[in-house]
Image 1: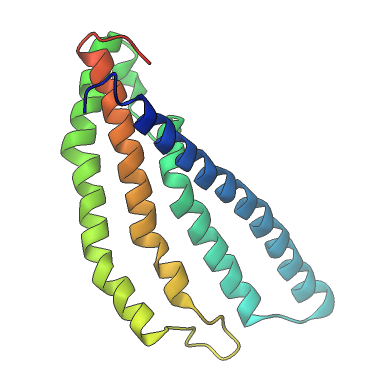
Image 2: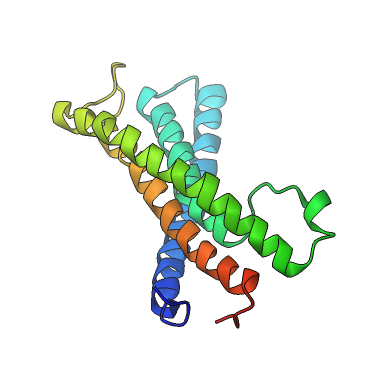
Length: 173
Protein backbone atom coordinates (compact mmCIF):
# COMPACT_ATOMS: atom_id res chain seq x y z
CA UNK A 1 0.00 0.00 0.00
CA UNK A 2 1.52 3.30 -1.06
CA UNK A 3 1.79 5.87 1.68
CA UNK A 4 -0.36 8.35 -0.25
CA UNK A 5 -3.08 5.78 -0.87
CA UNK A 6 -3.04 4.82 2.82
CA UNK A 7 -5.06 7.87 3.90
CA UNK A 8 -8.49 6.13 3.74
CA UNK A 9 -7.12 3.16 5.69
CA UNK A 10 -5.60 5.48 8.30
CA UNK A 11 -8.87 7.39 8.69
CA UNK A 12 -10.89 4.18 9.01
CA UNK A 13 -8.55 2.72 11.62
CA UNK A 14 -8.46 5.98 13.56
CA UNK A 15 -12.27 6.16 13.52
CA UNK A 16 -12.56 2.59 14.79
CA UNK A 17 -9.95 3.23 17.47
CA UNK A 18 -11.69 6.42 18.59
CA UNK A 19 -15.01 4.55 18.86
CA UNK A 20 -13.39 1.84 21.00
CA UNK A 21 -11.75 4.53 23.13
CA UNK A 22 -15.06 6.36 23.65
CA UNK A 23 -16.68 3.06 24.63
CA UNK A 24 -13.84 2.45 27.10
CA UNK A 25 -14.45 5.92 28.54
CA UNK A 26 -18.14 5.16 29.08
CA UNK A 27 -17.19 1.84 30.67
CA UNK A 28 -14.86 3.70 33.06
CA UNK A 29 -17.76 5.87 34.26
CA UNK A 30 -20.01 2.84 34.69
CA UNK A 31 -17.19 1.02 36.52
CA UNK A 32 -16.75 3.87 39.01
CA UNK A 33 -20.51 4.14 39.58
CA UNK A 34 -20.92 0.39 40.06
CA UNK A 35 -17.91 0.19 42.40
CA UNK A 36 -19.32 3.07 44.45
CA UNK A 37 -22.70 1.36 44.57
CA UNK A 38 -21.16 -1.93 45.68
CA UNK A 39 -19.19 -0.28 48.47
CA UNK A 40 -22.23 1.67 49.59
CA UNK A 41 -24.45 -1.43 49.52
CA UNK A 42 -21.88 -3.49 51.40
CA UNK A 43 -21.14 -0.98 54.16
CA UNK A 44 -24.45 0.86 54.50
CA UNK A 45 -26.87 -1.98 53.86
CA UNK A 46 -24.77 -5.07 54.55
CA UNK A 47 -25.66 -6.65 51.20
CA UNK A 48 -23.54 -7.81 48.30
CA UNK A 49 -23.95 -9.30 44.87
CA UNK A 50 -21.75 -11.83 43.13
CA UNK A 51 -23.10 -10.72 39.75
CA UNK A 52 -22.30 -7.06 40.49
CA UNK A 53 -18.79 -7.96 41.65
CA UNK A 54 -18.26 -9.94 38.46
CA UNK A 55 -19.64 -7.01 36.47
CA UNK A 56 -16.88 -4.87 38.00
CA UNK A 57 -14.34 -7.43 36.77
CA UNK A 58 -15.95 -7.45 33.31
CA UNK A 59 -15.97 -3.65 33.09
CA UNK A 60 -12.38 -3.40 34.27
CA UNK A 61 -11.24 -5.97 31.72
CA UNK A 62 -13.24 -4.46 28.86
CA UNK A 63 -12.03 -0.96 29.72
CA UNK A 64 -8.38 -1.94 29.39
CA UNK A 65 -8.80 -4.25 26.41
CA UNK A 66 -10.80 -1.72 24.42
CA UNK A 67 -8.48 1.12 25.42
CA UNK A 68 -5.24 -0.46 24.18
CA UNK A 69 -5.44 0.79 20.59
CA UNK A 70 -6.71 4.19 21.79
CA UNK A 71 -3.68 4.56 24.07
CA UNK A 72 -1.36 3.69 21.18
CA UNK A 73 -3.06 6.19 18.86
CA UNK A 74 -2.72 8.99 21.39
CA UNK A 75 0.83 8.00 22.47
CA UNK A 76 -0.43 7.40 26.02
CA UNK A 77 1.49 4.16 26.42
CA UNK A 78 4.73 3.78 28.36
CA UNK A 79 7.83 5.01 26.59
CA UNK A 80 11.43 5.65 27.48
CA UNK A 81 11.40 9.37 26.79
CA UNK A 82 14.68 9.94 28.61
CA UNK A 83 16.41 8.54 25.51
CA UNK A 84 14.09 9.61 22.73
CA UNK A 85 13.86 13.27 23.74
CA UNK A 86 17.39 13.79 22.39
CA UNK A 87 16.73 12.07 19.07
CA UNK A 88 15.66 13.74 15.86
CA UNK A 89 12.09 13.14 14.68
CA UNK A 90 13.45 10.88 11.93
CA UNK A 91 15.42 8.75 14.42
CA UNK A 92 12.41 8.51 16.74
CA UNK A 93 10.26 7.42 13.80
CA UNK A 94 12.77 4.75 12.80
CA UNK A 95 12.91 3.36 16.34
CA UNK A 96 9.09 3.48 16.48
CA UNK A 97 8.91 1.67 13.15
CA UNK A 98 11.31 -1.04 14.32
CA UNK A 99 9.40 -1.48 17.57
CA UNK A 100 6.09 -1.84 15.76
CA UNK A 101 7.36 -4.28 13.16
CA UNK A 102 9.61 -6.37 15.41
CA UNK A 103 7.68 -6.32 18.68
CA UNK A 104 4.10 -5.02 18.69
CA UNK A 105 2.74 -6.50 15.47
CA UNK A 106 4.13 -10.01 16.15
CA UNK A 107 2.77 -9.77 19.71
CA UNK A 108 -0.70 -8.92 18.37
CA UNK A 109 -0.61 -11.83 15.93
CA UNK A 110 0.51 -14.12 18.77
CA UNK A 111 -2.37 -13.00 21.03
CA UNK A 112 -4.97 -13.50 18.29
CA UNK A 113 -3.55 -16.93 17.42
CA UNK A 114 -3.24 -18.10 21.02
CA UNK A 115 -6.63 -16.85 22.16
CA UNK A 116 -8.62 -18.11 19.18
CA UNK A 117 -9.10 -21.71 20.39
CA UNK A 118 -9.52 -20.55 23.99
CA UNK A 119 -12.35 -18.22 23.01
CA UNK A 120 -13.82 -20.80 20.64
CA UNK A 121 -13.97 -23.40 23.42
CA UNK A 122 -15.64 -20.87 25.68
CA UNK A 123 -18.25 -20.11 23.01
CA UNK A 124 -18.84 -23.83 22.37
CA UNK A 125 -19.52 -24.42 26.05
CA UNK A 126 -21.48 -21.15 26.39
CA UNK A 127 -19.28 -20.64 29.42
CA UNK A 128 -20.73 -18.79 32.37
CA UNK A 129 -19.65 -18.02 35.88
CA UNK A 130 -18.72 -20.89 38.16
CA UNK A 131 -20.05 -18.97 41.14
CA UNK A 132 -23.70 -19.21 42.15
CA UNK A 133 -25.38 -15.93 41.26
CA UNK A 134 -22.57 -15.01 38.86
CA UNK A 135 -22.91 -13.67 35.36
CA UNK A 136 -23.61 -15.91 32.37
CA UNK A 137 -21.85 -15.36 29.07
CA UNK A 138 -18.19 -15.30 30.07
CA UNK A 139 -17.48 -16.21 26.45
CA UNK A 140 -18.50 -12.66 25.52
CA UNK A 141 -15.84 -11.18 27.78
CA UNK A 142 -13.24 -13.66 26.56
CA UNK A 143 -14.02 -12.60 22.98
CA UNK A 144 -12.46 -9.24 23.79
CA UNK A 145 -9.00 -10.89 23.86
CA UNK A 146 -8.63 -11.47 20.11
CA UNK A 147 -10.78 -8.42 19.33
CA UNK A 148 -8.56 -6.09 21.34
CA UNK A 149 -5.43 -7.61 19.81
CA UNK A 150 -6.90 -7.12 16.34
CA UNK A 151 -7.80 -3.48 17.11
CA UNK A 152 -4.32 -2.91 18.49
CA UNK A 153 -2.82 -4.55 15.39
CA UNK A 154 -4.80 -2.28 13.06
CA UNK A 155 -3.74 0.81 15.00
CA UNK A 156 -0.14 -0.44 15.03
CA UNK A 157 -0.28 -0.80 11.24
CA UNK A 158 -1.57 2.76 10.98
CA UNK A 159 1.18 4.03 13.29
CA UNK A 160 3.73 2.01 11.32
CA UNK A 161 2.69 3.77 8.12
CA UNK A 162 2.91 7.15 9.84
CA UNK A 163 6.33 6.34 11.26
CA UNK A 164 7.50 5.21 7.81
CA UNK A 165 6.49 8.56 6.37
CA UNK A 166 8.60 10.39 8.91
CA UNK A 167 11.45 7.88 8.90
CA UNK A 168 11.87 8.02 5.14
CA UNK A 169 11.20 11.69 4.65
CA UNK A 170 7.74 11.68 3.08
CA UNK A 171 5.16 14.34 3.82
CA UNK A 172 2.74 13.68 6.63
CA UNK A 173 -0.95 13.25 5.65
